[in-house]
Image 1: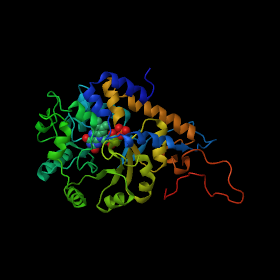
Image 2: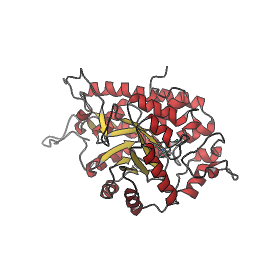
Image 3: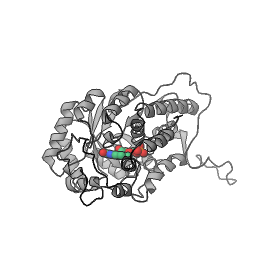
Image 4: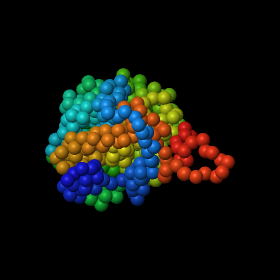
Length: 373
Ligand SMILES: Cc1cc2nc3c(=O)[nH]c(=O)nc-3n(C[C@H](O)[C@H](O)[C@H](O)COP(=O)(O)O)c2cc1C
């Protein structure tokens, strides 16, 4: 029986080719950050409220002014056609079914226009060296009705994913990349290795800096979110540059190995940032959603779990599992609405110590999150 996201992961691993599975599953280098995104959620513990009337519960919230039914958005993941014949379109329908927003990758196998017609869409932008092409892509996203741009800033070059190098990762010839100028660099590499790594090196701009964020803000009326922020000072700077908010993310552990787990970086950023703060990386349980929202996220995003749903031909399943788990977790936390998910619900590490030295009364539970934690 496929009851949990981990069950879906196992089933997906048995269905996909070694190349596709390696591409979806892997993190950078030793995969320390990949593992820590999950472990960090397990280090956060809950302090449930009791005797709260939880007979009526609701998961609705707003993101950039849009009402959604579930505080879980779909993270941008490239090349969903490797997992399902209808790729991003199947994901878009699953997101629409759950009443949420989908973030569409620049590297999708489905055109922006088809996805934006199916679900409220935010377009994830990789900034090309060719700024004219980048601007044209922004115009296309606007014309398609996308509601925001998500600029990914943690990929000036691609992290080293060993599985992709070992499998000679490349784009199968039957898959299109309709948002790209030139897919040829993504075809099988004559010298083996990862074609994606070569593509990113050739097309994306490693000189991207804050001035380019200003350039983008001046070239679109859409709200801009910055994805891949792990530091409070960077989050504050993004807001100064006129952005609507940030996505706290380490790219699912696929870029800088050894980077801080996303949920560990979240509380300090939520305290420092006046805009909307989102997080992704390692969300696998309804209780993870509770923890992230309690630590200051407006909503979370899930990446790989959606790919697992595609791979087992059941694209709605991941969000259905999360919705049911979140409902149970909110009831058991004494938090009937999203607004009730406040920081006092979480502590870091084990339960607060039951004894403390005589004469020293801690003002808060050991491990409780402070602004400076
Ligand atoms: C296979 C795969 C492809 C991804 N492609 C993109 C992408 O094109 N653009 C982007 O900003 N992030 C991309 N990401 C990162 C995700 O948006 C997200 O940050 C990450 O998957 C969240 O972690 P999770 O998979 O543990 O939920 C990708 C992640 C995976 C696993």
